[in-house]
Amino acid sequence: MRITEATNPLQTILLTCRADGKDNIITLDWHMPLSFDPMMFAVSIGKTRFSLGMVRSAKVFVANFMGKEAQADTLFCGRHSGKTMDKFATSGLEKEEAKTIDCPRVKEAQAYLECEVVSEIEVGDHILFIGKVTHVEEKDKGKRLFHLEADRFTTTLD
Image 1: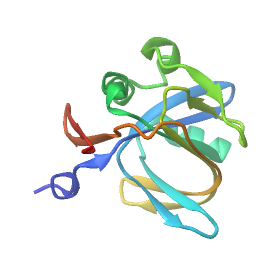
Image 2: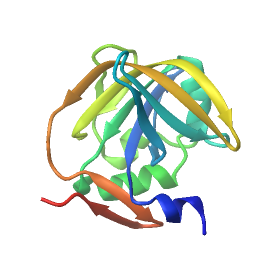
Image 3: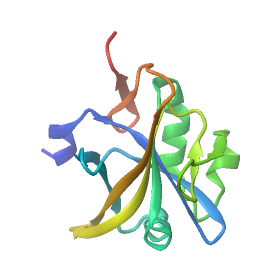
C-alpha cells in the first residue's frame, strides 16, 4: 500500500508563486496547518518540481483552496509544468494580486492563505516549506475539492 492510498482523500490546493517576473501554479495535496499563534502553514513540494525553485527564491506562496467546480483546471495545473507554459494563460484561471505579499493568487479560489516562508526542511524526495500566514481570506463556503487518486476527486457533504 502506498502512503497516498492510506491518507486520501486530501484537500487539494493550487499553490501560486512568483519569481524572476514569472507566475506559476502547482497542484498540491500535501499541506497542513501547523500553529494558531503565530498562524503557520506548511506545504510539501517535490524536489523535481519547477515551483520548488520559485518558492525558494521568492520566500512566499499562496495556498488557494479550490472548489469542486475547479477540478478540470486543478488537473491541468498538476499535469503541466510552468517551466514550459504560463498556466494562468492556458488554464483560463484568473490571476489577482495577493493582499500582503508579492505573489499572485487564483481569483476563483474559495479561500486563501498568504504565506511568508520562515523555514524549509528536506524530507526525502520533497521539501517542506513552513510559512507564516500573513493574510487569511474566505470568499465562498462552497464544496471544496478533495483528491482520491489519479483523476478521481470527491467533495464535502452538505
